Length: 312
Image (cartoon, rainbow, N blue to C red; front, side, top):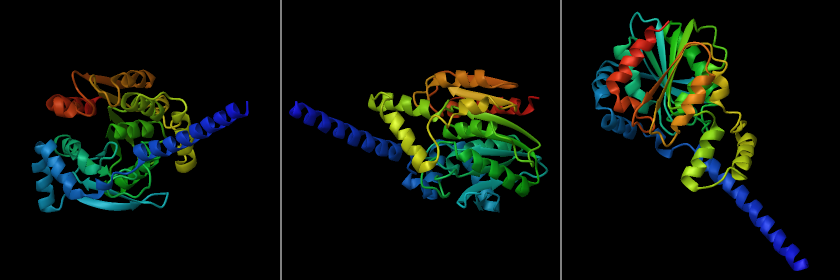
């Protein structure tokens, strides 16, 4: 009996140690900033390879000092970085949000569309713990929603404009939806949203990835990791839920998702779309992997944005 009890104690200790260790590993794997994120030269090179159509626009702006950057102190005290481009006589600002472990440079092809083709001022922030912005841990679009609200105030001051569109891809899309459920700053006269391949919640996304990448069930690691995240970062996986945020969104929203997305699974867009009240549109791109709708359907993507900007 004593021997059995000893074995049970050892098994319990091993289980606890493995679970705690696994939770720390999971948070490190998911929320650690990309060490290469501050290498702007490498990011520009990658942008040129992936989106050569954006390079003439970027080069021409650089030649005349039109592509500018700034550092802003957030209410948290962190210094965050962003790029911006003015558009003369425009009253509309596009805030364009990048994905997980990317930076503002990685989303400049979308910024180009809004500036060059849709006539908007454009602001492209490096989100918390990305690019040149400070931060110890990625917030998966939850805490970042508050940063974007502050960026909207900065943009209103920079451009003297009050009409906004917030467009995000992947984690940037989750951030966009999280923003949509909040009260807008007084400087915002009108706002509309575009979310491209965002997830329903961090819990759903991490649960899916645990199964796909590691073949692990939700219990116990998801629960302990979420608790650890709350203790270390102030939010839990279930709390960070764009699905709940879009339920409160009264502004127009365009939903985009590829039907061959195996990183943020395609099914997630449907409950998001159904939860959103009011004006909304849904575009499913056929045969498209994660965050590839623009690349696979460039002309149609631009055309749909043009039409969306005219939607009442």
